[in-house]
Length: 95
Image 1: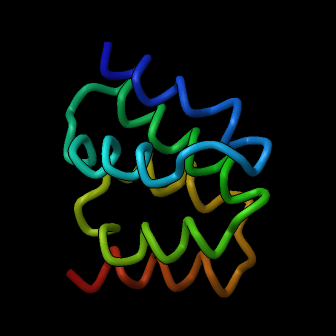
Image 2: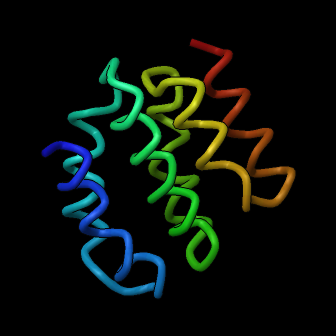
C-alpha cells in the first residue's frame, strides 16, 4: 500500500507535472523505511522527477540525505549532474 501511494505520483512527475508537494510529504515520512520496495519506490520517483526538474530533487534530498537509505540516494542521483550528485553524497556523509 505504501509503495503504491508513492508510485501513484510517478506518471505525472515523470512528465514534469503532478503534485510534487504531495509526493514529497509522503516520501519524507517513509525515508527511514526498512522495506526494500518502499526505499526503491522513493528513489525511483526521485530519479524520474530529476530528469525534468533536477534542482527540485536536489533541494529536497540534500537536507534529508542522511536519513535516506543508500539505495534511495543512489537511485535518486543517477540523472543528476556530477556536481549535484556530489552535493547530495557529501550531505549524506556529513551527518
